[in-house]
Image (cartoon, rainbow over all chains, first blue to last red; front, side, top):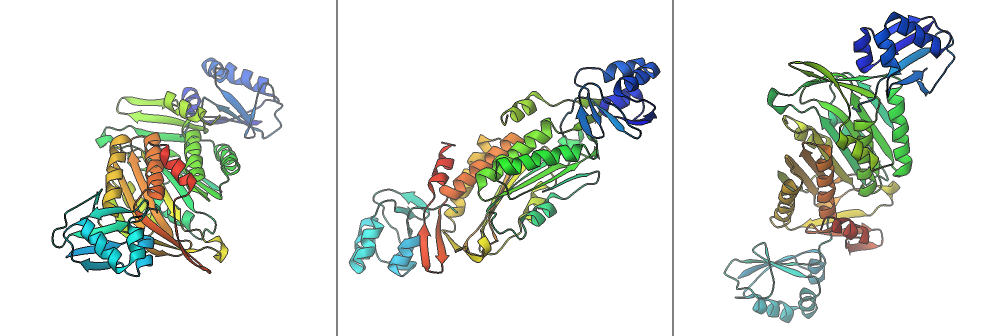
Length: 79
Length: 79
Length: 147
Length: 147
């Protein structure tokens, strides 16, 4: 189970901020999220959305161990 | 009588900071000061020394009414 | 160097007092306080979201880079998160250096980073609804001065 | 806009608190605190002489020029005079503006003026005697940036 976090407009779009999802890698996780909510799936793949795995930014694929935290970060606005 | 004020190194050189001197204009005042202390007279005419009459900078000659404040200002150092 | 994210109002003056205390080599302390503009009641309330553990770590890395780049003695950063009322302090940055040029430039550099690139998500609550906002062109231009 | 010369120690944090209070349009407050460096006891004690009524008026004129040039909402300046112990605050400048660029630049501008051109006379007291000092080349170069 990965702990999935959504921030900013992604959380508003999805209607949730945190959810546990069973997925062994990032691609599987993305598919599970898109199967549940196609609009969210598209938003997560949208321009400028970054992914952090256990608080480190990753590009492309990542293996997700049990308890891994995956955060989807829309473009950052600054403070 | 003009009230004469010295600042910075000029006061240290003269050994006084404030003195009343009878003079109707700046040239007379400078002569009186130089007659009393030739080294000071030279310092007051030295490069970068400015004169303020009643707290306004003046260049060249100035008439001194009774009670006028004349300040000799060595080069300013900033704070 | 300390970076704090807080969802509670904070007092910039108290931070300045603590930051200036007991310094030996420091001749210059520059600070910046960003306030949520009140604009006579017309202002939108501001909501800032951070990713705790990620946002503060990212800011800390940039603060450390500033310490090295500008030869700082110390940095203090406090940033509000959550809902911020008009007139309240949003951000505080203090930099300590031997001389003023380094203190000013580092404070300016850190503010440009915080306002344009730091991992926050900003929402404005207006009478007609809420919207997520992006950095302004000026924020981007300011930040690019340091690249 | 307030300019104060004081021969007593002052607390920069309290000035920041007062300066930030009750602002409507101000989004940005930049401040600078100049400290007398302690340098582990090796520092010379500093003595600053001013011409009361002349020095504060001259500073006030430059502060007013800064308000116009940088579109400031407010300026606060406090400058110590007399004998200043190591570690004590020598100068405090705060600028309030709508946005940060103007607040920073005005604070920087005012400090350059205060450090290089303001009507003060500065004496350093060292173990081997006292000497009057002049602005450094860097002070002059910094101040000339604004001409």
